[in-house]
Image (cartoon, rainbow, N blue to C red; front, side, top):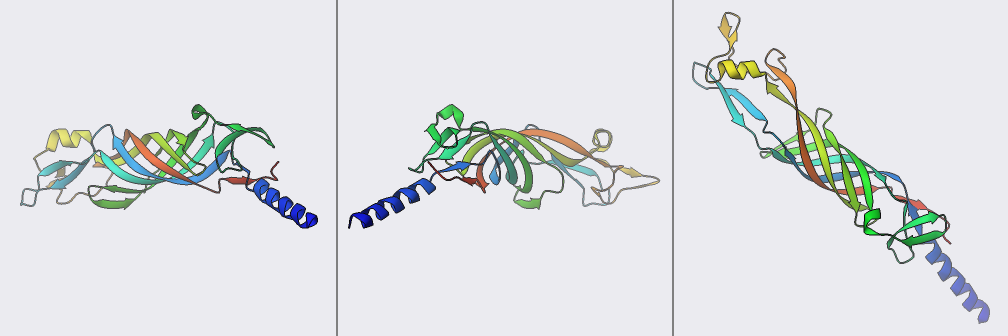
Amino acid sequence: MKKNVILILLFFSTSIAFSQYHLNGVTFGFGAGYSILNDEPSSYSLSTDNNKNLMVQPLSKSSFVISSVVSVKLQKMGVSHENKLVKYKSEDKFEAIKWYERFSINASLNLIELSNSELSFNKSIDGGIGLGYFVSENVQFAVFYDIVTRRQLRDYIINDYLGKPIPNGTEYYNALDENDNNLYYNKTFTGTSFKIIISIGNKKPTTGS
């Protein structure tokens, strides 16, 4: 009987020990949230009449984005026997984590964007760098400084031909093509985004204490 009790206690304590683990300092994950640009991008078209006059439509500065995220924790973190987020100073010494020790540095690359009821997969290298706050071992809230590019008409074309036909040699354009570098260029926009980040592969198993 005594032997059985000892075996049960040993099994129980071992199970608890193995429920304790460290978290990787660098993790990969996905973030989702809203991005707000500082300036409005624009959409361009030609009028449907025979004049083919240049028309400009302002677009929304906000969009819903899904991003891939790399996170770097500013504090060595782990999960205790009680499944609480803690910090550690050595392999077997955990301490209660303070609120200001839950921060991380994040780098994001936008994958999908939903704006003006249009879904698009990101074709350029848009993303940002931000500060995150871990609310649990796999979830953090983050704010990012974003840099994105949009194909926009060149300024002189808008200034000279807004409401008019755009000359194309001896004729006029009857359609606009974003791939035409004579008309368009990659304009850089900056903004802010707020995201929830889910980390993947965050656990770093240990032998416990």
